[in-house]
Amino acid sequence: MNLENSQDYYGKVLTGSQDLKTDACCTAEAPPPDILTAMRNVHEDVRARYYGCGLVVPQAIAGCHVLDLGSGSGQDAYILAQLVGENGTVTGVDATPEQLAVAREHLDWHRERFGYAQSNVRFLEGDIEKLGDLDLAEGHFDVIVSNCVINLVADKQAVFDAAFRLLKPGGELYFSDVYADRRVPAHLRTDPVLHGECLGGALYWGDFIDQAKRAGFRDPRLVTSRPLGIGDAAVAAKLDGIAFFSATYRLFKLDLEMQCEDYGQAVRYKGTVPGQERVFELDGHHHIEAGRMFPICGNSWKMLADTRFAEHFDFFGDFSTHYGVYPDCGVSVPFGAGEGSVPSTPAACC
Image 1 (tube, helix red, strand yellow):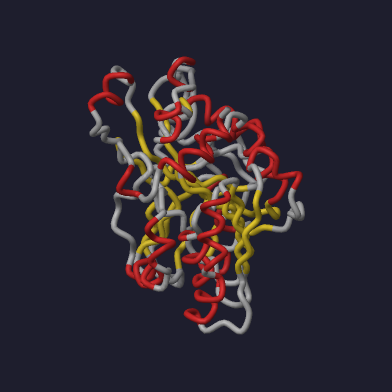
Image 2 (cartoon, rainbow, N blue to C red; image 1 turned 135 degrees about the vertical axis):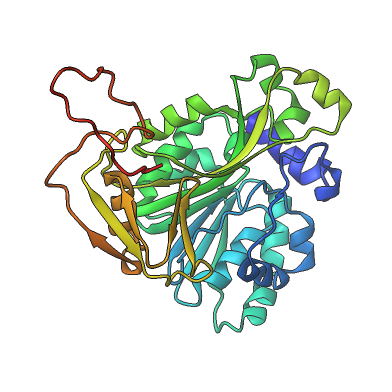
């Protein structure tokens, strides 16, 4: 039911973003200057049928191979195509023929606009719950993005599982979606308007964390979040008592621990990531100023040292000595301080 409803809602019911009843499928934050410039190079027909809820443009993706799950009319794909450059590629997957038609119609227009000899974008028709049925090589992609689409599918675990398989070691799933502060009741999950507005299928955040970890993404990192407004009175009445949020997460394909462990490590940012020369933002709790020694947990270390970000940092320390868990990350030590215990004063990781 979910796939058919999504195809009907986004292909036939909505003629443009102005038809939405809530701001769940709208991007609220102002884009950084480089993204704004890239958006100006996207065809107006593509922009008119955009239904994303966040910015799915992670840092330092020049030369990367990117997979866009639920690429719609292609706005995010065409923005990413400019940032990966001619040596990178973007593959978009979508199940709505009307949206794909808009995206494909303007392939040559964008290639010429970008000044590329060949297009670095392709669009595939398919269900993101069944990525194994498509022409996608496992372990091929540096980055997978998705913008307010995973909530629309019934089997979200299948999407996370497939994303983990398709990523290279050290690769990243970077996506925006809609979450609820509790599980949405079954009768609301099947409401076609609520589903199309990205609310009926919203994951309870606790279930998302569980599914992400089961897929292999052991330490999901929240990048940004905002509460959602519901301007339509009828929709708001149906959902009374449930709070919804748009959030962007980044999940790395790395051998991580289940919580943030302290090994006495630190990094120093070189200030070399385009667009974040002064401060590199790993997630909502790790804003790393250029030139400054920054204490960091073992998982965060790997997210920088074992990924495309390694060249942008100097690294200090190793994993030879363990100092326990960071108090503000994961589960704190459950035992009280007994006689002879040594007080701990680690620098905050999160």
